[in-house]
Image (tube, rainbow, N blue to C red):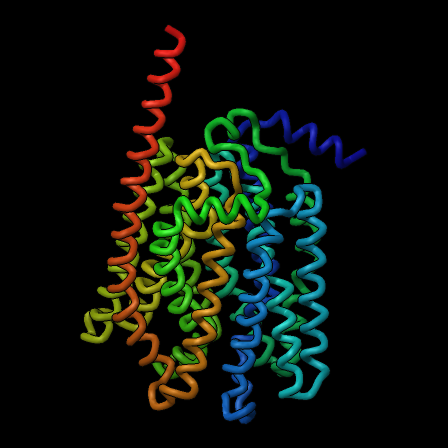
Length: 438
């Protein structure tokens, strides 16, 4: 009875209220998920190796492999999931991730690394399911901004909490479980709030196109029609995923090498970055023309890639300090990374008027990104051992942005040509209909 009253209440509210409600629910849900994913990176796990690999790298690779496996499965599963099953699946996946953190704590290392793989496997589809509640609306950019700031800010905050627990004497193997556990009550409330969200209105569907499950035939047809452009876009996402994961997963080691051991440093840098990215992303809401918004997203990605490169060169030449570099590097990185987390693909579907969903496109990109991260981490351990994580990050931040600027430029001109070609086809069809009527 209460559930129906809340749903009826929400259906009568303005778009601004729905934006606030859904934005808060999506932010909170994904924030809580990160409490089950990222705290372990605040630990060192020193003195343990497996097959000659540093144990922290083993754990990062294990979780990323689980994530990549989930992304691969998500290309099919998330694109086909029924709306009424989304909330249940989110809760089950995060709950099982917590169970695996419990076993990670009680099983002796290095045998407990399997549970970090299973943890990643459980969490890898959560973003797509959460975004499924938000996509296909006029206010998707506003909602996407809230979701974007959640995974930027939450990563810093949960690592600060994890580091605090370790400093208070909690075993580093138990720390991830306890960090996740304290967020579980809020998770239940947040997912319940998402489940009550009103469906996209008729106006939303008219403006953004209807979002439908995609079977294998629909997925293959979409790739056949737009594959080259998608490859150009995904290359950028893959490279920025590598950069983000190195910066994020080995932030403790990077800051230690710089000379900073303050546990709150993650919260300070990521909060500033999250605020800037939230504002930039939300501004896209005011761009109503979908083609213009899609191309502006390309410009944002291009600018972010340049900012990564310029800030890193400035840091190397002592033009900015380490805090400034971390913030500007993060802003540039997430300017290029965040648009892929729903907004870019949402606009693409709206322009093309293709019946599909963001989940398929996002998981295609995400699967590729995390797989590449695993390869880079293995290379860093076996082929590049003389370079520290700080220097490795600096090297990546000077090479990858150059490739990204080239690839995003190719994508810009490819899709611009596609849009113009589709527009000409539509005009010819309209002309034929008129001639037939006469």
